[in-house]
Image (cartoon, rainbow, N blue to C red; front, side, top):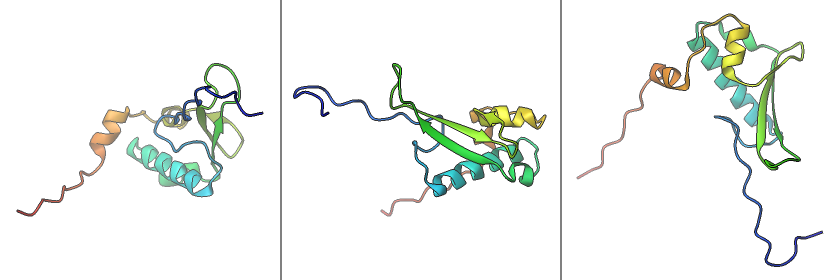
Length: 115
């Protein structure tokens, strides 16, 4: 049933750290796995470490954080990982913080404004 008139709308869903909002879209899953591969390579891993992995983003259905989403990586054996850092530790790599990872990325040149 619809909420009674005058009831405030629920807040929009929050995103899981650095990942797309909750959805079952294959494109978003592919992007999340590509980001994981890029991160693991930056940590010193090989590009093929995540072959057969899956990414799932689930919306919370109850509790005080209803509507928030949680994203997980699953390896080929079905083990769940909550973060890129946790995956890096699984492969015995040295995890990078978000700041360290960003510092390794090539900088984009800003376009100059004419005039």
